[in-house]
Structure formats: structure tokens, C-alpha cells
Image 1 (cartoon, rainbow, N blue to C red):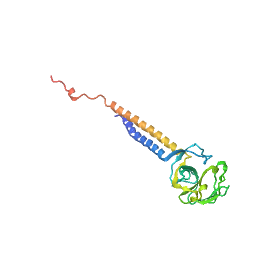
Image 2: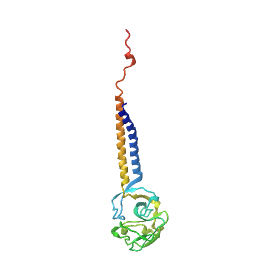
Image 3: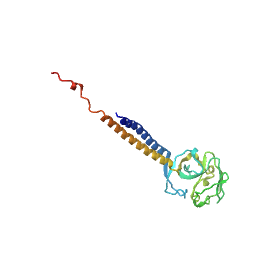
Length: 223
């Protein structure tokens, strides 16, 4: 085998498996780390409208942060289905609102540029609750059209278990883009490895030359 043939064979052995690993890894990660869903109500307008398709990142309860828009199990409050709401308070937070006023968290007024029509109240009753540990206080962005934690304050301060969070709306799509690029690169590597492997095998066969004649055919005949 020539030096070039050996290099092609080595490259094939490296690129093929690496490419397959990248493709499989990207596919598995995308299927387990991300999901999609469609907005079903106007409760999160104006940021998220009915019929809009969203990309979600699957997260655990310990990854939830204030301000996150999450898909969470409604615990029977919404016909048993998951709901899309924004996390306002975590375990230990004191969340309050005077009728018609801004929402406060631990005594500080919450800046909410995302609420519809700039109205943080939506005409809902006043409330003042402390979020139990391991639970979340959630509100919709369209406060006048959202049946959220404000209307269930008699049930554990209106909160839902943090463990019920299924996923978080993914605003930054860099992760999925990188996965797609990784899958594309992996596919290209796998195909390149296959092509180089075929080329190396063909070169090895052509380098052998014609087969030598059998020994008996080279022995001169007996006179």
C-alpha cells in the first residue's frame, strides 16, 4: 500500500466513527434536551400569542429562576393539563400586590416590561403571600386574562410545585443551532470516512498487481 493509501485508510478509521458519534449524540440530545409546544391561550400575550409554536428546554426544579416562562403541571387547576406561566416568586419569597398596583417581591417593586398594556394588575384582587419551599408563584403576562396564582391563594398561597416544571421557553436558540451544526458536521465526517475507506480499499487492491501463476505452471515440462 502506498503512503497516500495508508493515510486515506487512517482518515477513514478516524472520521467514520467520530462522525457517527456526533450524529447520534446530536440526535439523542435534541430529543431529550428540547421539545416544542403550541400556545393555547392569550394568558401570556403580548409575548406569546395563541397558535404560536415555541421551543422549550427541558429543565429540573433546581434550574428554575424568577422571570422564567415555564411549562408547568397545573395540578388539576386547568383540567389537568400543563400551563404556560411566568415564575414570579420562589420558595421563601413574599409576593404581594395592592389592587391596581405593581407586584412586589420581598418588598421591592417588580419591573415587568413584558405585561400586556403595561398593566401588572389586570383588575385582580389584592394579595400578600409567602411562597412555601419547593413551590412557585406564577402569573400570566396578560394579567386581565390569566387564571394564575392570584386566584388560588387559599391553596398553598396559590403556588405550584417546582417539581411540576416540565420545560422552560428557550429564547436563546444557540444550543439547538450548535446541535444541528454538530449533526451536519458528523454526517459529513461519516460520509467522508466512508468514501476514504472505499478509496483506500480500491487502492490496496490495485496495488497488488496481477496474481502470480501457480508454481506447477512455471516448471518446465519433462521431455
